[in-house]
Structures are given as C-alpha cells and as structure tokens.
Length: 283
Image (tube, rainbow, N blue to C red; front, side):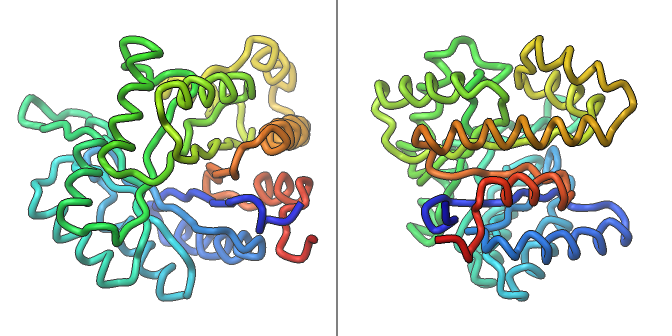
C-alpha cells in the first residue's frame, strides 16, 4: 500500500530542553522519509507552550515541511490569538489543529474556556478558508461528555462551524472507531475522521495518559502489558505487532489515514509504518 492512498501525519510535543530540541530535529528528519502529509505540534494547557510551539512550527516550515500547530484560546484574549494566527498565515502555514484546550493547573475562575467550535468559527470569521482545520474526535467519548449522542452532536457542531476533518483520540479497539464512524454518518457528519494511533512505548506512561484522557485500555491488553514487568524491549516488540495489526484493520475497513502520536520517538512509529508498507517508493 502506498502512502499516496493514505493520509499520514505525525504529532510532536514541544521539548523543554536543548537536548530535547536536538532530538526532535533528528526524529523529524527521520520520519520525513515517509513523506507525511504533515507534522503537527501540540500546545500546552492554557497555551503554556505557545512560543515554543510557534518556534518549532515556523522552523519546520522554513525547512520546507508541511506542519500544523495545535491551537486553543487557553488564557489568551481574542486579539492575542488572532495575532498568532496571522503570524502563522504570514509564515505560510495553511493547517491548524483547533482545540478547546485543557484548563491549566492552578488557574481560578478568571480562566475563560473557549470551545473548539467557537475557535473554528473565530478562525473562519477572520481568515476565511485559508486554513485546513482539524478538530479532535473521541470514539470512546470525551471524558467530560454527558453521553455518547451528546459528544457526537458536539463534534458535528465543530464541523458545522467550518472544520474540514477530525483526528481521534487514540484507542486499541478498532470496533470503537467503526461504531463511532457509523454514528457520525447517522448524525450527518460526512467529513473524514482520521484515527489517532499511540505506539506502546512505556506501560506506566500509557496507563497514566489513558486514565487522564479517557482512552480505554481493554482488560486483556492491560493484563498482557503488565506481564512484561520492566522488560521494555519485549513490551515494545509486542506493542509494534499489536499496533500494526490495529492499523491494518483500520485501513482495510476504510479508515482514510493514520495520525501517529509519536511521543517524539522515531522507532516505534517508523516500524509500524514500514510494516504497513506506507512508503513513498511502494506501488
């Protein structure tokens, strides 16, 4: 399978140290061999990594890469956010991942939560159709959603506001994605929704992330991962096989592409992509 048939994207987070920045540059160059449609760069809670995110995105763009900053209002006012988006536009950026964003810790009642549909509408109002807008989708329901149907309605609101496509939270049960897509279609959502893929790199970190974001780790998988104890090499090898199989199932059943949460690592994502044959040279 060629990656011309499948949209491929890789997500990074802004490193906090010079060594981390150096590693990110290396990983970015290594993953670029797969000719991804874009790289994305996350935005910390409350906009805490705003400048870091902007620096990485503009640097990637200057290197000739297609890159999408994640964006939320965070603690910023409309003028600040509008100025940042204008900077991205001037730098030649044409894609944004528009999010509600997380509440920063230690912030009281003065913090104004701006929902993703409002951010999408804000970008469309001020910048027209310049940006391809990606939004978040939750096959296993956003942890704060009142109900499954409510969550789908909220996602439809993001598309109605002008979003082009969705990227899901990661999951390990492909049926959750297929059922979600069926319900989206019933709700009148026709835009593509790309599965988010999380390689299995570290058991404890994965459990912590999953408990926070509401991603379900099936009981059998949790038990299997626990059985590796501190044998990280075996855990990663098992994880690569499992995630490859997940991706194969998704693509064979109509998923339009894959969005990898790289955790700023090269090897696990690269091995899965190679296993899938998603290389520019493949026919």
